[in-house]
Length: 401
Image 1 (cartoon, rainbow, N blue to C red):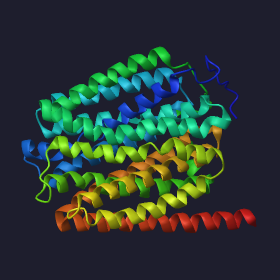
Image 2 (image 1 turned 30 degrees about the vertical axis):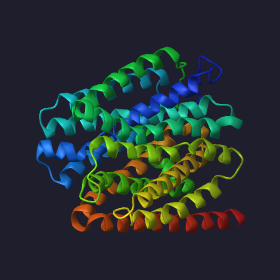
Image 3 (image 1 turned 45 degrees about the vertical axis):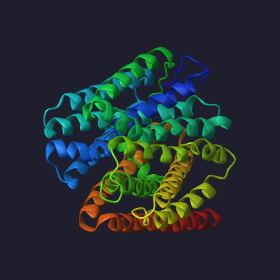
């Protein structure tokens, strides 16, 4: 432990603070997903191919991964409230740049900037874990993660509706205003909290790599997170093209409504956190991987059956969110004094996986249509299940030895 003291201004979570943190995390991460139902519209305006439009999502996720690596560790060094408020304002600035951009170059710059600073969500989550009572930590993290996951999913619904009312740029105008408002609320309601590990910034970043080297559980959970979010991105990056194509011919607003189907799965995040508090996190992980693999069987028939598509989306989102929350519960138990750096390590891998999934999905759809997307998703899910079953058995064997 560092000799530097943790100095919270309040003894813990105040009434109403958990919902505020949940909404803030949802708004922050939503900025990375507004584009998904808008890709066909943006592609038409800018004269892009499906793969070119898909690069917008990849840019957002790579920016997010860079922010996780370079910015989130600062939560173990700087005063949290100030850091969170500044990051929220800078994320709003990125959305504003996208709204004002006359060319794709500006859209990519704004998308990268918003992605880089929307990692404020990953400073809020470990702060909630730190402020929560130990017996309630899993439930609190699950509740805040529900907000984050709902933000990812409902971003599509909101974006589709706003684009229908005023075009795709309206989405980014409204998003920027919402983030600015969130910064104001967070500045007024968050407690001051600082726990400095007493390291310089370069040594702080190097210590993230040290955690990877020293903690096999972190390495396993990081791979699982990357694979789960890759599968998630494989589905959601190409689904807009399926729904806008000949099979359905849906508008942007209708495409956005499919986020509501996925949002139902996000409500399970708090329940998974509660299971983790009771010692059943590994069981939730196992069930999540089997459900994720099976979901692709339903999704394969999506061009022929809307029911199959909805069932597949529900199953996949429930599985991904269950795996993610159980992963976070596991890594937060490793080293409580290093939660921001553990988050940085895990979530960097998580969003690199998501960026890879988006890139592969767009290419697969262009080359082989929806069947190619499902094949890629199934392979990624099978790899994740194999890694979890093998890794957990190895861990139990070593622990038993």
